[in-house]
Structures are given as C-alpha cells and as structure tokens.
Amino acid sequence: MPCVGCQGWVHLGSSLQPFSPNHTDACDPNYENIALAFRDPAQPKGRKPGLGKQAPTRPRPPSESAQVPAWLQRSIMSLSLLLSLLFTFCIILSALVLVKNLEMSREMRGLKRELSNISSSVLECQEEQRIGWSKVQKDIREATKSIGTVRSRVEAGKERLEMVTGEITQIRTNIQKILEVLERKTNTQPPSK
Image (tube, rainbow, N blue to C red; front, side):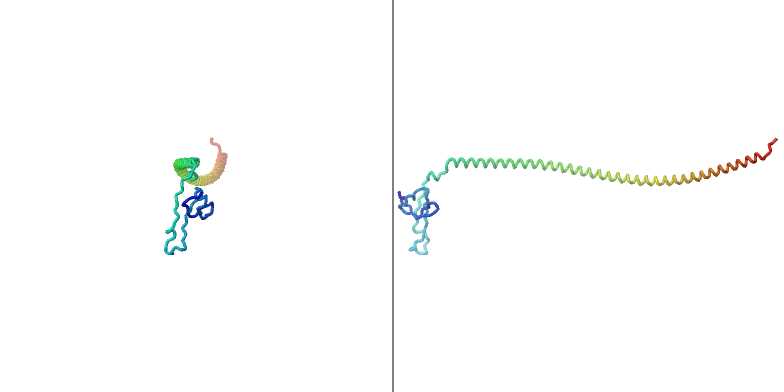
C-alpha cells in the first residue's frame, strides 16, 4: 500500500533510492525517509537552495522496534550497578592501601629512629674503643720504656756485682795474704815465758 505524502529519498539498507509513490516499503519503520534539497536548474542562482520547495517530513511513529527491550534495560542496570560496586570497592581498597601505607611509614620512621640510635651508639663504642686502644698503646710504650730502664739498671747492677765479685776475690786474696803473713809472724816469734 503506497504511503501518501512521502517525498524524497528512501534509505534501503546501505543505498539511497529515490522514492516513488507506488513504493510499498516507504512507510515501513525500518526505512528512513531522507529529504534532500537539490537546486532546481530553473531556480535563480542568488536564491538559497532548499528554501523554495522542501519535502514535508512527518515524525516517525513510535514503533516497537525503536523501543529498548526490557532485558537490555535490566542488563544495563545490572552493569551500572556492578560498575558502581566495583568503583566503591576500588575506593575502599585505595583507602585501605593509604591506611596501610601510613602505618608502614610510621613503622619506617620508628625503624629509622632506632637505626640512627644504633649507629650513634656504634660510633660512641668505636670512639671509646679507639680511646681505649690509644691508652693501651700508650701504656705499652711506657711499659716498654720502663722495661728498657730496668734492663739497663739490671745490666749496670750486674756489672757492679761483677766488680764487687772481683773486689771480694781480691779482698779474699788480700785476707789470705794477711793471714799468711800473720801466721808467719806468729810462727817466727818466740813463745813468751
């Protein structure tokens, strides 16, 4: 059945076809009425094309194929609900990560403080050890010097002892000589009556 009042071009699939009043598919909602304005060769050039005769377009009646099916609406609502839940989950997860990061940063600051305390303690111990070793080395030098002094004194005492021993042997020999001389004298003297 031809559609009354339709003029222009009809969109059939992927091609445009001129509309004829005898065309039976022109009022089918699957086809689109496209009114194109062409310049009439008899029309003066100064006039804008399309201002003279234009094909009147009538609004398409709402058909069932143009409405969104209920299952598609439910699917879109389900997807939007799932997307909002996912977004909420991401926000909660981000908040948990931030809280955990804050706790870890506090722990890291505590560890840094402890490490600085330990390093300062280690430095103090090293300084005390260095001072202790310097005192020990000083004491060792002084002990070595004292040992050298004692050794020289022992050497001097040994030499004196050798001298004293030599003098003692000389005194003995002298005493021996004196005793011999006294014995001779006593032997040579007549006994007194």
